[in-house]
Image (cartoon, rainbow over all chains, first blue to last red; front, side):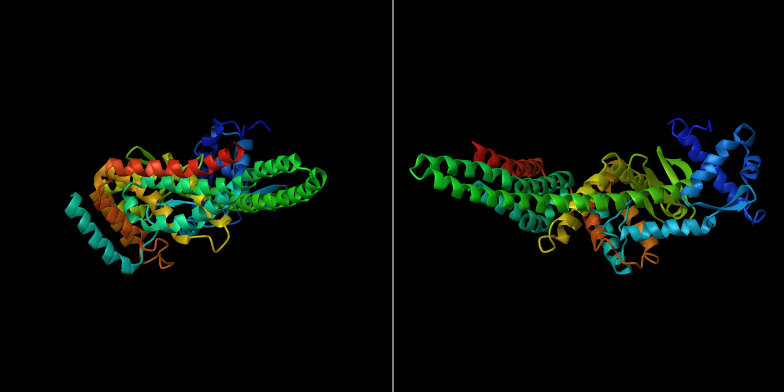
Length: 135
Length: 301
């Protein structure tokens, strides 16, 4: 396989392609309930003409490893489907980030560590103080 | 003797100093100097504990020379040998008791953090719409709950939701982005990871959760300073309230902050500490680190 997978220049391009491929799989999920083959994905992409078959195969392989798509055998080829809808994966991401905010082992750095409804009144009073002294 | 003094200092720096420092809220007004002091105290605690064994060695070799100058040299040497072995074992135990938990918790926490970040980056990269606001590359998630965070690391990301972009007016948005950029530029994640690892590697009774909370607050206060510089303390405070307001219905998971957000707001109203106080804080940090090193040097002199 000649597709470069690790050269620094190709990484951002692969990232963009992964996004484009996911977008297409989501958008056409209704038309392809059984998933799409590498050939179908390649032909559907706007930049498809300039892409090598192996490049798309690499992208789908990477997405499978990241568990963002699942694949099933169809004869000699694989058919790829998104691991979840765009909405369900977005919900998963949001849940992970909000849970992370209240975790002592936070993996992300949040602007806000979460505030309880009781805290809001205190925050309003504090804001008035900032506006009075620094405004 | 120096080894005992070092052991005592290690206990004081690990168990007593953090509890006192967590109460000195006035130092929050200069978060950078306060964080340097916290790093100095924790580093000095580890250094003192690790120096216990090396400091004991010269003491033992000197006992040996004195014993041999007397008449009962052979028996003294034999007695010294058993003593030497006993001390060596104790010293090794002390060193490993400090080093091993440190390495284990470092590895465990590091692996966990990196796995969570990798997974999150993968999701954000395919779900987030790449956009540029205020000179910052963003990934925007299609979700109504307003939230803003960054994924630290070599391939860092700043993530906002559509909800956050809708809720935040321009001035508040630049405050939020300046805050996140400060986190990434200053590698605050490494600082936080360092303190988290230390926290989990000391024995339970010595651990002080208030110290870890204080350090987290200082890191946020430091990024808030950057936000204040970019768009003023008032816009920064408003952005905190805007996001807190938008998140409360969902973040029923509990406020991880425990009043941290209100504390940050109050800090935005305060001016930084006067320069001489800040200088004293740096001096304190330097003295604390110098202490175990001086004792070790004295032991070997």
